[in-house]
Length: 114
Image (cartoon, rainbow, N blue to C red; front, side, top):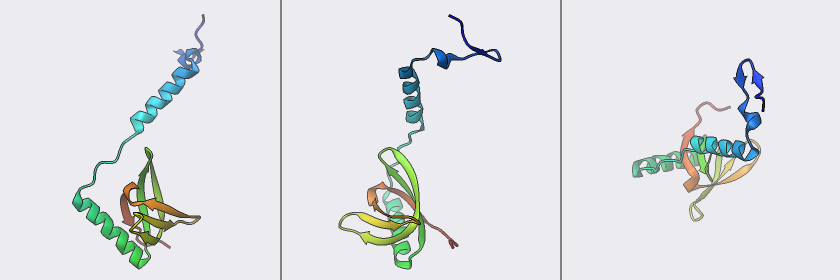
C-alpha cells in the first residue's frame, strides 16, 4: 500500500475509517466543552440586579447563555419578567425569545447602543 504524499507529509486521513474521523471530531468537541461554574450568592445577586435594572429602564442587554452544552450570546431588550415561570422574554432584532433564569450565566447592559 502506498501512502499519499504531499510535500513530504503523509496523508493519514486517507487511511482513516469514517468512524475514526467522527470519534476525533467528538473528542475535539469534548475538549472545547466548558461547563459553567457554579455562581456564588453575590454573583447571583449582581446578575439579578442587572436584569431588573435593564428591564425597568428598557436597556439593551447582552446575555451569556449555556443551554444543553452549548454557549451562546443573546443581545436584546427584556420585555417581560415571568418570576413564577423563572423565565424572561428577550426581544432581539428578529424574534422574541424565552430564556430560563438557570441558563443565564452573565448579563451586561450595553452602553451607547443605537
